[in-house]
Length: 312
Image (spheres, rainbow, N blue to C red):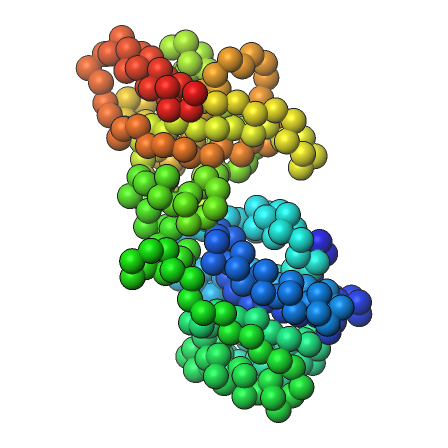
């Protein structure tokens, strides 16, 4: 998959594509349905299938300094889209100039002149342009005027009255419900990053951990999780382990910023500098402060056995 960060950089062979527009945070089941529709159009027209999103997102632009909300940072999003067979990703910057554009200016400047889109695929709740003035009806009308088709995908429901959305998935993750979030994502929620040096206290307790910063990720419910861990080298998974992880600020040995500290079962070796993908499978309990180190170690042992039973 080719990634383009500016309209001026888009290669000619990717102009005239079918373009699915969205934030694609999480690349959840609703996003996958949107992409499948785009791929069907692309196959029929014999043109590339592309996605259009913004980096940073409009939410991040309008709320600088707010708590991170991303389910998938840029790198992870690109990998997941590529795995779905998307040919190109137009990850355009959302800046003050983009925020000022009217719906008409966005269509003419980005979709028509910049991308020469043959077909645009959006969800039923799609809004665009300054003040979110444009919707799918406006897009379809302008498509007729400018020579591109528009396919509006009906809302994909999660059951009951809830639609599958990144917002719903975030709420489940923050509530300590990774299993429910996984059903909407189509896979477990994962935090990816490089292993960093920590205070090595886990070694003295008999539980050496791989420590990772959360960086731009959403803050899941703090606590202890049963996890599955992929170890990567050059973007290829080379090993996989079950484990148990502490996500949070460690009340016994408090940290200023939340950490993800993962103990891998049946592993020996050095993970420093390795890239890990830690999947949150099941929430075991909240973080707690214990009366003694012995009490802490005893609870960690129980956590390990509970996680083994869940993952086994």
